[in-house]
Length: 249
Image (cartoon, rainbow, N blue to C red; front, side, top):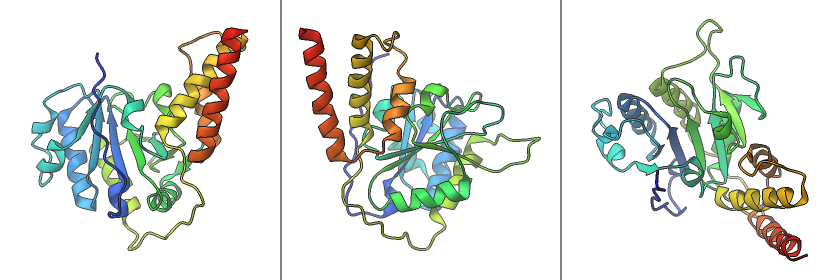
C-alpha cells in the first residue's frame, strides 16, 4: 500500500484540548469510528486520525451523531509513524490481560493527569487499537507509556467507542489545565523515528544487531531518553557522522 501523507496541522495558540490527537489503528467496524468521533465531540476534542481502517467508507458512519463534520475531517494514514510524526508524547491504550509489556503501564487517572499537563506544551497522541486484537507490540514501540482503564478481571476489554469516551472524559474533566514550564520543547516523533533509523543502522554496521527490520527495541530505547528537540538534532548529527565514517573506513 502506498503511503498516504495527510497535511499535519501546526501547533498554535488554541484550546489545549485541541492539541490531543485520537489515533485509531486498524479499526474494523466503521460504526466504532463514528462512536469515537461522537465521544470526541462530547468532550471537546476535534483531532481524529485513522491508520489503515478496514472499512474505507467509515466517514459515512451513522453512529457519529452530532460529529459528522469531525468524521469528514478525519485524517487517514497508511502507517502509525506518519500519524504521530508531529507529536511530542504518544500514549497507547491496552487492556493488558496476560501480555508481556515493555512499557510502563499507568492507571487511567494517573495517565490522564500527565496528558493534561503535556497538552500545554505540545501535541499528544492517544492510540486505540483494533477491536479484535488491540494495539500490537509494533504499535507499542511508538509509545512513551501505556494506560489501562480499570475494569473487572472477568471482563477486561471494552467496546472501542466506550473506551475512547472514558479516556477523553478523564482528560477533559479538569476545569482548567495547569501551565507547565519547560525550558526546551520535546523532540517530535518524526525526529525520534529518524534517530531510531540511524542508530539501528549503526548497530547493523557494527555487528551488534542482525535484523534490519526489527527496530522495536531500538525505538523503545530512543523514546525512553525523553530528548529535547535540540538534543535530538545534536544526536542526529553525531549519528550521521558515525555512519559516514563506518561506511567509508
